[in-house]
Image 1 (cartoon, rainbow, N blue to C red):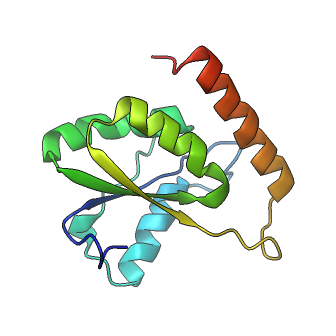
Image 2 (cartoon, rainbow, N blue to C red):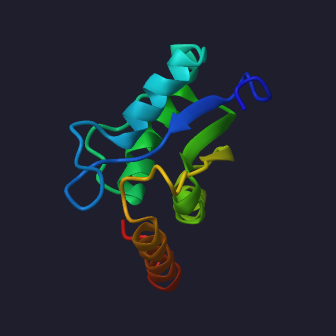
Length: 135
């Protein structure tokens, strides 16, 4: 995707917390590390918001960074099961054009209960669609 959109700023999404990611770093930090290993220049990738514990915080905490950097377009990376909710939230918060890339979750190697994660995403998106995004 970086080769296809080399001028886009990449936003690796994903927070952390006891409810989802119990590692010491946000998922976005791991995505950023992996992209660099794959050859994407670090200056093409934002840092993941350290304080982010959910998708809304991801978008809200990235907004000042994007306001400072003023990219015309951004490329956001998230998991396949989280894509719909991330798109919904970022569309409401981020003014830039966002192109999305989702990783494909290997059900055989997923340490989490993928069915539960997908159900959580479905419920969370339905709640956001009916109640809006809290500010």
